[in-house]
Amino acid sequence: MRERHHGRQAAPEPRSRSGALGHRLSRTGTEPATARSALRLRLLLSAVFLPVFAAATAGFAVWAAHEGPGDSPGTGPLAVLAVVCGLLALAAALDLVVVSRRSAGTRGRL
Image (cartoon, rainbow, N blue to C red; front, side, top):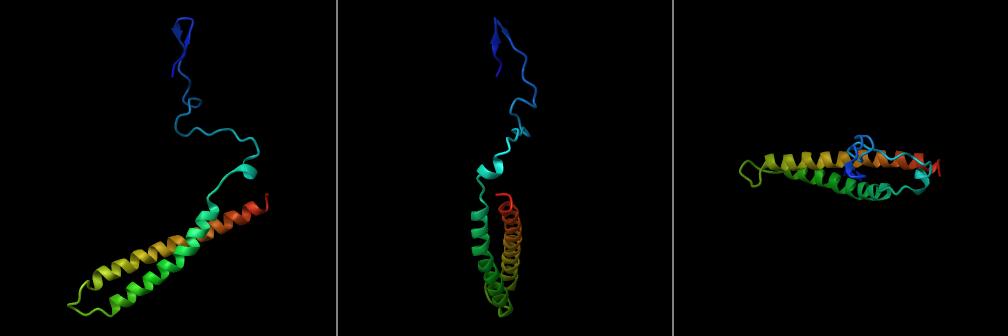
């Protein structure tokens, strides 16, 4: 937004100070003590969904192994579901590791 100074328009602010994308506020030094983070929620969700997706992976894999040639839904879709659940279990496990490392790092600073 441009402001008017005595009947004329002021020059626009440079992009670095205008609040455009990529602008970061300067640190005051109190952020680690007052910052709000969703690490506990991520830890809880990863801990809950890791065994759920691991069990779903095993279940779909066993179901796909016991399917016959003419059975429905068939081995293809079940194998795809097993792979997708396995990838989601892997993502939950990696997130669990990342969150536990970050929370261990912040415990020492508080």
